[in-house]
Structure formats: structure tokens, C-alpha cells
Length: 391
Ligand code: FDA
Image (tube, rainbow, N blue to C red; front, side, top):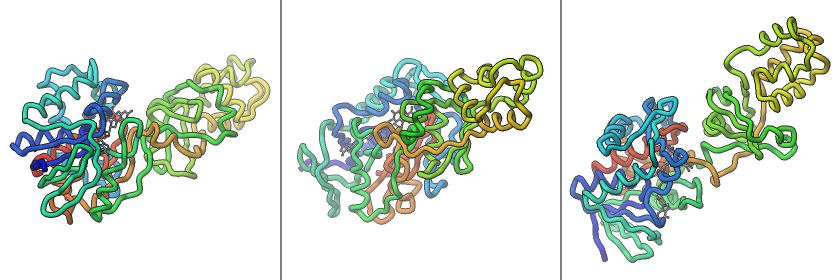
């Protein structure tokens, strides 16, 4: 039977980072992955340009039952450490918006950097290898489709449930349960939200329409792009709020956060009131959306015919639109999985299971989920790095 110091299940962002750090410490490291290539999610991330971190990393941008858990790893291996590494690899990058850093060329630059680093420290990478079972005696015995391997440490870095087509398997949760760790309920996050068929009918015409909006749910607000789709809503503001939304919750959407539309319409009523309200509104919102909102507000006649009260009613339809999604597009399109291995069962400094010597969990499989915008990769880098110092 093959024997190594460390087996890492998952050649994603967290697993590769952990492998490099352990390899630097001259540990013999084997990374197993059932995919054909390493880092497949990195490859498709950020529209192919990988939003690899965010300059504004802060603990309140991560969801977890214990929000402080991520702090130790994020402080010890920061966004600036990863940015420095990218710069040293001469990978050109830029800030797109809100501190989000993207590769100028391709996400493949990040994958190549990690693979080169793994190579330089002698990490073994075994692709197209599935894990059949994991057992622990003194050491871990991992039975794979290529045979049995033994190791002192086992790092579970096989991600969450999002995008099964890309290799997500949920194996990490099974291993955690097998060794007695608790799992915080998982659900798709950073995911488009969907409407019931009858609610979809009136907004169908707006599919493809986007605005800059302010979306609020459960005391959390995001001011970002907002997109109507054939199934419901998407765009960054909706992906962000999806992590806070629960079935039965309504969203409050300000479709025009930049200024008070009622003031503008009052002025227009005085100077150019012989137009339909939706025509006046179309100066401030895309035409189809203006027509929809005016219809929802039930206004008839010209703008000149509208009382202050009717205009205020229209204003509420624009600034406080209440909508109730019924669900989400699920793991099929979710960027991440909320919940996961309970942080109470892990050591925040090392990512080791408190009650199982040598067993570590890093990256998305842990109950730490970042906002959209590079936060999830930073968690993968930081948690992988933290475990890599001790495995
Ligand atoms: P990850 O999922 O990356 O890696 C897990 C690895 O384990 C995979 O290689 C998989 O094949 C392997 N595996 C799974 N089950 C296995 C099994 N049973 N046996 C063997 N191997 C197994 N984040 C961000 O910060 N910026 C961004 O731009 C984006 N963009 C983005 C786009 C899209 C479309 C998605 C789906 C996601 C993002 N994300 C993102 C989120 C980001 O991709 C995610 O948070 C990290 O990839 C998580 O890294 P991990 O290494 O934990 O898991």
C-alpha cells in the first residue's frame, strides 16, 4: 500500500493551497480528485477571469453560525498575501468594482500558478481518482479507484454541493458525519431566485432587463445590479441577498435608489403632464419596467391627472417594490453552498477536527460562506494555507 504524510481530497482552490504549504514543509503530499483536471471551478469563475480575492475582506462579509471562526485564518493569510503571490507570478490583474480583483487574461493563470507551485514542492496529483471509503486506525486508509493509500493526515477539501456537473459530490459532509462531526444545514447560495408561474407571467416581458437596485431582506441590503430572467431574478444584488433569503420571505426592492422619483414626476406633472404616467416614468427606468410598475400602481389617465397621493403610491411601487420569490435555481447554478461542517467541531487556527487527530476540513465544505466578489476564494486560500502549516 502506498504511504504518504498527507492525503488531500479535492484539487480545488483550498486543496491546492494546502498541498503547496504542506509540500513546502517537506511533507509528502498526495492530492486526489475525481475530475479530469485540477481547479475546474477556478477555471469557470468570474466569467473565466477568476475574481480571486477582494481588497475589502472583513468578517461581516462571511456567513457562518460562528462569524468569528473565519477570522483567524483570514488574518494569518490575508488578501494582501494572495495578491502579492499573484504579482510575483507576474499575473496581470485589475479591480473591477467594490474591491473585486480579476485576472486581466484568464483564470487559467491562477490554476497554472498553483500547479507550478505544487510541482515545485513535489506534490503528487492523482486525477480521475474517486474515493471509495475512508477509515482510520492509527493512520487514515483511503480506498480509491486506483488502490489503497495510507496517510498520517487527511484533508477534506472537496467543496460543497454547488454545480454537480462540475464535480461537486457532497463527499466532504459524508466523511464529516462518519467521524462524528455535526453538519450545519446546507442550502444553495449566491443563486438566482425564482417565481411561481402566475407571478412570472406579468414580468416575462422584462426578461433580460437590468437596473442598478437596492435589495433588502432580513435586515440586510445590497446595492448592485438587478436582472429579470425567464425564471425570476438574478444579478449581483439578488445573488448576494439569496444567502440571507429564506422560503416565505419577501424582498423589498428599490428600483431607483439614486433619487426620489416622486419629486421628478411632480416636476414633470407641472411642465409636461400630457403624457401617460408610464411614459414619464420611462425617463427614469427601462421602458418595459416603467410600464409594469405603472400598471402595478393602477394609474389611469395622464400624468397631469395624478394627485400627490397617486404619485406617492407610484413612488412606493418604484422604491419599495415587495416581491416574494418561491425558491431558487438550486445547486444547479448556485455559486456556493451555505452551511457545512460545523465550525464548533473544528479548531479555527488549524482547521483540524477537535475530536479526530489528523482530520482537517478546508474551503467550501466548512460552514463559512462569503459574499459574492472574491470572498469565497479568499476563504479557500486562507483556510487551505492554515491547515497547510500543520498537516
Ligand atoms: P472546489 O469546489 O473548488 O474544489 C473541490 C474539488 O474536489 C473539485 O476539484 C472536485 O472535483 C473535487 N471533488 C469533489 N468531490 C469529490 C470526490 N467525491 N472525490 C474526489 N474529488 C472530489 N468565488 C470567488 O471567490 N470568486 C469568483 O469569481 C467565483 N466565481 C464562481 C463562479 C461559479 C460559476 C461558481 C460555481 C463558483 C464561483 N465561486 C467564486 C465560488 C468558488 O468557486 C468556491 O468558493 C471555491 O471553488 C471553493 O473552493 P474549494 O477548494 O473549497 O472547493
